[in-house]
Length: 202
Image (cartoon, rainbow, N blue to C red; front, side, top):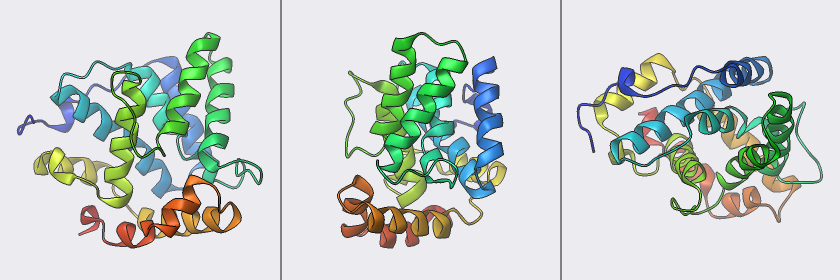
């Protein structure tokens, strides 16, 4: 791990698609959920850069902005899990951005796979990174994998606000309405308690 890594060291892509994805997230996400989405990218990119994991920064950034969009009222689905709903939004957004079909499919995959227990880094580096980064940000998993100084800097720039309370309520609602979904499994396995005990909130 690069102990001295700082926020300024993290590669943040500045493309038309990334700017539009952030603008879309700003339009639909609460301040807490928006900051969570930004941090999800930053944690993921920092982890990758420190370990020389090659990744597509634009794909990861766009997927980060949409990975929880299925939780917001406008895109909440009553028929599919929230990560699948978010994957559909990512596909449609990518089509509007002019991405080829295969790249649209990848954006959708990364969003869906962030809820998996594990994603193979060799097969899907972006999905692997987003699964790890959201695990840190929501349930406080493996904080030692990121330097304390970097964690403090990211949290100061993009504060957590009410993400713990908001996300716990959202995941409980998803689990109740869709008990066979991964959200339902997470709730049964105690994710709400892990959210409440997240060391990033201490």
